[in-house]
Length: 154
Image (cartoon, rainbow, N blue to C red; front, side, top):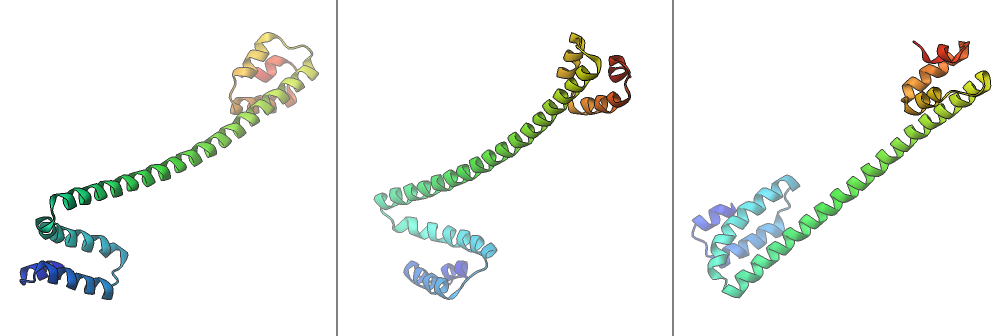
């Protein structure tokens, strides 16, 4: 309807007045608000720019730019907050994994040392460089091991 008002011969002032009445009476669902706004803005821009002086056009342009910048800032802040939250969650997860790994390696080292005495350097090296799944496998093998080789050999 907003587009048709122009084509039916309504003046710009009449168009603005009718748009105010329509706006006051009509509450559009959110998905339609953007489409209505874009259509009305297109028609409004054609006629409004003709009636605005240079100062008003510059002001309007600056206001639009300021609104865009505010929108970009809000988007940036929301993205930054989400990134920080994800970073914290990943850090906690990695910390838990590293803590579990360190705990398993330390416990296995203590058990091996208690059962077999002083450990050779190669055992310490293997314990330091093994991932958590391998350490867990060695813990299970330790239970029945008669020697260090029984724990670490396949």
